[in-house]
Length: 301
Ligand code: HXC
Ligand code: NAP
Image 1 (cartoon, rainbow, N blue to C red):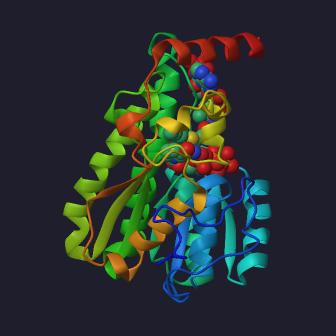
Image 2: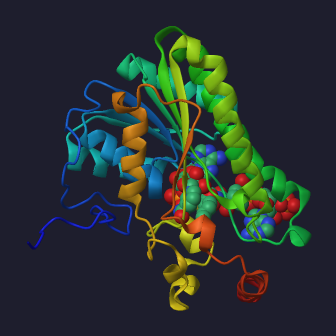
């Protein structure tokens, strides 16, 4: 008997650019997040943008926050147009707690509640440890690790402690194998994975769930552009991934949707790896990545 069922790793719809999906097939109930409000750092681009879209398609209103007000304002217009939900664009630098506090207050004035925090903002680039300045290392930890703590603590004290809530931290698998030219981002993300567990333990009694997603290489993102995605594609590197392809942003957003929704009501303190199995098999070739970095350095001079 022939089957018309799609294969079990069939990816959902996605588009490469920071635009909404022209078509979307529901896998979960469209009302899964009805009435909820999510605060998403870095929600104006890449993975954060798609998470905002998928949450909104499931009934959620969102606040998208980043340093560049034009970016989040344009993104919010697209998101509202595609989903019919409310989206409030706000500016904040996750390294500066007062800017986050101001954004949270503005969000609460608008929506009167925040149910979900997605810590997605991050900074990254390729650089060998020997060429990385102390300030560059600190800068990435400030954005990724401190930014995640700052937003989590501010939302906990201002709202989650009294009302419960869900925190989702977007990390990476970089530290699992000690990825080359990534000591800054790998260290920052590993610290966040630890934070996920600590905060889950301490804040669980206040009905706050804290989880993470560690994506692998995801197409149509700034992350992939910066880490040499095009070069990896051209030499067939993705064939070495167990699922033989890049992930897409909608796939990560579906993991996020599950973890923040009541479907995951008994899940806390865990980080879901969404990488097609890549951290186990993708080569970690110092020589070829160094070559790529050197040629990029020459071009930028
Ligand atoms: C080496 C660099 C560098 C580079 C900056 N620095 N870029 N060092 N290589 N390419 C150094 C600077 O020289 C400086 O150190 C310090 O870092 C701070 O630089 P600033 O430019 O002042 O920082 P800032 O304006 O805060 O910008 C932060 C940034 C920037 C991270 C450098 O690129 C940014 O805003 N990125 C946000 C977007 C982004 O990165 N998206 C990708 C996320 S993807 P000195 O010593 O000179 O003062 C991701 C993927 C993970 O995280 C895993 C994928 C598999
Ligand atoms: P991206 O589009 O560059 O997203 C990063 C976002 O963070 C941007 O919208 C940026 O907006 C914001 N941001 C950066 N610094 C900030 C700051 N100091 N304060 C507030 N906002 C700030 O990159 P992406 O590839 O989609 O990555 C999204 C997340 O997924 C990151 O956590 C990344 O580490 C993770 N990840 C990505 C991949 C991948 O393959 N792409 C793999 C593993 C993990 P502004 O510039 O306007 O501030």
